[in-house]
Amino acid sequence: MKKITRFFIVITTIVMTTNAHAQVGIGTTNPQQDLHIAGNSSTIRIEGLNSTNNVNNNGIDNPVIKVNPDGDLILEPAVNAMTIDASDADTFMATPVVLSDNIGELTSAVAYTANITLTKQTLVEITFWTACDLYNGDGTNTIEDGRVRLYGGVVTHVGTGTDVVYSANNYTNTTSIGTVTTGFFTIGGNGYINLPPGNHSFELLVFASGGENTNNGNSDGYTVTFGANAYNRFQIVYHN
Image (cartoon, rainbow, N blue to C red; front, side):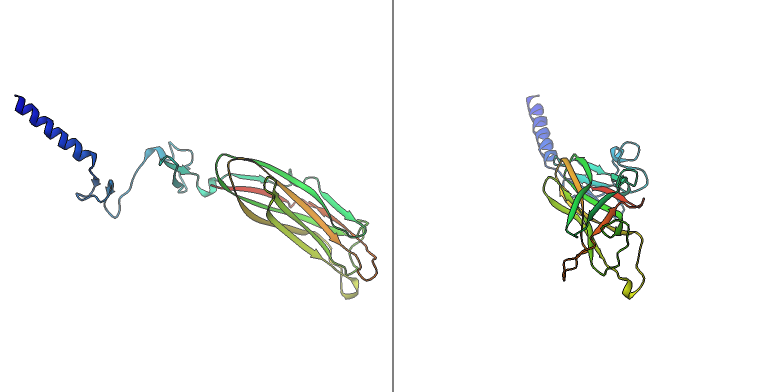
């Protein structure tokens, strides 16, 4: 009886040792890794990641599976499910910002501020555009003196002072060489910044200058209205 008991103990120890170091194969008797699923059409199904059980699976697009610091598989939202903070004319530039100077010196103003909160390291994309209206320093007469006016905007991450988006244009016209162009112009662009978890702020600073005659110092100045019509947009896209 003692010999039989001792025999089973030895066999059990061998089996446990073998299982502790065994490689598991599915569809193969010769696994090459701890878990080896063979077959050129093999598929792994994890029900915790399906559209019924996981909010990041919308059942239409193929979301991305990533690995967290603990080695767990997690599901990221599909591209069209990524969060977008969108602002149109109802909030962004709803009140136009006017920069004016009769001499033509550089002026600027903060036109918009956006605050966000990130729960993890995120690549943030900023996109904006806004309509601009240009006149002489009096704000009523069209520009026809042939002198250059510069106008633009820059979106800056307040915490680091990093300029994320920069856009600028210039304008000049004179009646001596043709018809003066009037109407709305536009500045805009997009850029990216990689940010850690926490609270973050962005500012859109608009600026303008020009209109001075460098030969004699005379100037008709400028008046630039940012947000001059309803075609304005400020978007923040989170690329997780």
